[in-house]
Length: 190
Image (tube, rainbow, N blue to C red; front, side, top):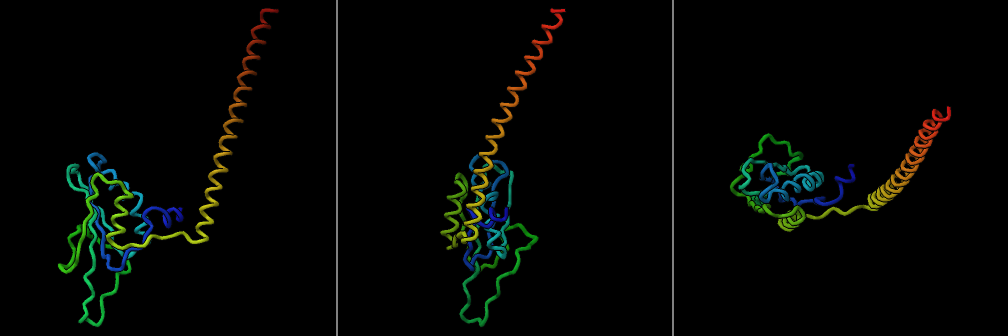
């Protein structure tokens, strides 16, 4: 299961200047909110796995006609006059879900997710943040191939079991029918 989170759509390392990501979309799927919901369910966990220090908040509304946006908050550019810049946070634990907690020096960019599919949203996010996709290592690739082989074996075994069970049911049906015919014939002979 961990392999499914480490690799796949959404597995990317964001640039260091990304400070926060906020999603805002409706609870229900209609009127263009399906893509944002699928992005949240399928892509965001992988993105969060590879970027644990970046807070990623989600705000869901009941307004189906409202916007579906993904807002990226960027850290201010390092000041050439300051000797040190503030270090990146080590965790994303935050009690606030509002996207407005940022200094006025930050740059923000938004993606309109409404009526867009999740791969399109991810591609736009990768382009905007200059994120680097995570590629599978040799060990992970071998693990993926082994899982694929297991899936194929499982499918073959499932088909074989279904055939054996169908044959067993046919034989039981024939036997019960024959027993019924024999049982009906015996009272008539007596």
